[in-house]
Length: 304
Ligand SMILES: [Mn+2]
Image (tube, rainbow, N blue to C red; front, top):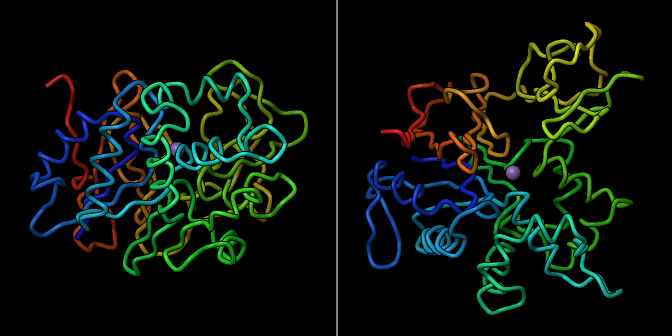
């Protein structure tokens, strides 16, 4: 039985409080529970917080078999930021934007120091997804069409082979898009001429789709993050992806707000924006049910 914990983004203190609330206790180096295990959905780092402590807590739990974990897009990016591209830069270029995005993590784990290298090496051991038969975990989307693309590059634990990161960073390679869908989500181009402003005010012509929602079949009700934009009541393209399996699926990644609840009967997001003011670190306490229920979300309110 599993407690699935959302994106942590360096918030080690919140993580420890949540583990205690869930009944985990620290024995020797790792938190553990007599009957349960944690599953982390990835995104351990980036944000204002304690990155070393977060990685230590999660890594020790995984190594002591008190937890499982999958890779988030932030770990994938950190790995690519650390691998030379052979022409003087890195697979994730060290440009101004990326330097800024990685600055909190690098401030605490200086680039190419031994603590940094150890963290990167641990990130490389994180599987891209977990299929436990009775439940599934992936950071962003359980995208069936991407699995045959990634499988040839995975080891027996579903970890990306270290020599595959170059192809995974190459926009002309199918592996790039498969990893993008699994770890970062799916966007669809809006019908011609339409756009909306994202939360930073930038105009966008592609939107995230509610791939977990069987009712989300038309532009007018199928997008997230499009704000006040008026989208037409015309159907989505036929190849739009939808998760219609009944195996429960847990994801992180979506910076949800408001009251934690399942996205659908069989899909739940456990990322409730702990790195944002008013956000919280959330767990779903799963005990074998196929239909997910709101009562099984657990979190700590900062105002309490
Ligand atoms: Mn993410």
